[in-house]
Length: 181
Image 1 (tube, one colour):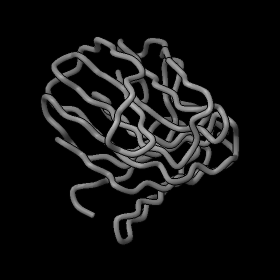
Image 2 (cartoon, rainbow, N blue to C red):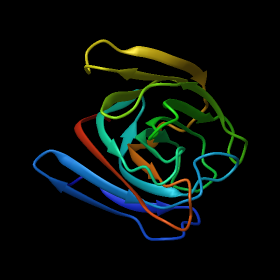
Image 3 (cartoon, one colour):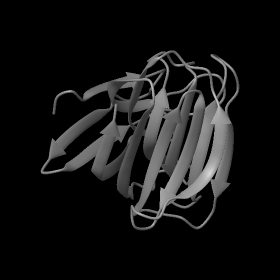
C-alpha cells in the first residue's frame, strides 16, 4: 500500500516482488548478497527524513541458503553501493546487523547465532548514529551494534530480502511493520 514501493537493487538474477494483505508483507528477492561494496536484493521501501526507524516481526525466511536474509534497512540512496544499515534474520545463521559507512566501501557486521524467525528486528537513526536491535516479543529490544554513518537527511527505510544466491529467489514474510519516517 502507499507509500510503500518495491525495487530490485543491484544485479539480481531473478526479479523480486512484494505483496501486502491484511497486515502481512510477503517479499521475494534474489541477489548474491547485501555485503561487499555493492548490494543485490529486493527492497520494499518508503522515504524518510532525519531521525527515523523501521521495525518488523520477521515471520519466515525461506531456507534457500543459510545466509539468505529478511530484515529492515535504512539506506541513503537506492544505488547498489549506498551507505546503509540493516538488521536481518537468516534461516540458520542467526540475526545479523550489517552496515556500510562509506559509499562503495566494504560492509561490516555483528552477528548473534541461534536467533531464527519468527523474531523482531529494528533499525533506528538518530543523527548519524544507527543502532540495530532484535527482540523475541517486540517490546524488550536487545541492541546489537551502534555505528556512526554519515547519510543525507533524506533516506529510505524498509524491508530487504536477499536469497544470497543469484540463481534463485527467497521469500520472507513480515508483520507488525512500523516505519517512523
